[in-house]
Image: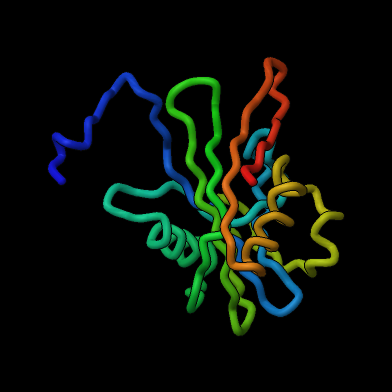
Length: 168
């Protein structure tokens, strides 16, 4: 298929592709406590991840981000979900969510992004999580367990409140 046949239309909705990754070891999950300077998310916990760079696919970007942020190289990663985030304009965000397992927990020094913490799964929801994680994480872990990815849309109302719509 030629580039011309791709029908690129600059006036159409565009997205910035990103990854979000969660690593498991036995009954623990690796989370990143974001630095306080991170605005609304400062001091809160999230998975690791980042932007998909030109020439990468979501899986290769997830592997790169995990290696950069944790030093770990999981033997396998599974795509568990895709979320389209409507930012109210262009570009939006497409988020590819992965889960992998490590045979032994890794540790990495703090970075400009934050500090890594292995957290018992039973304690995750007692932590200050980024806004969507209390809803997104259980769905992600279930998708990993049953090996069926989900898709969802995030929208924000005029007051900036998040609504998550999962496809059935």
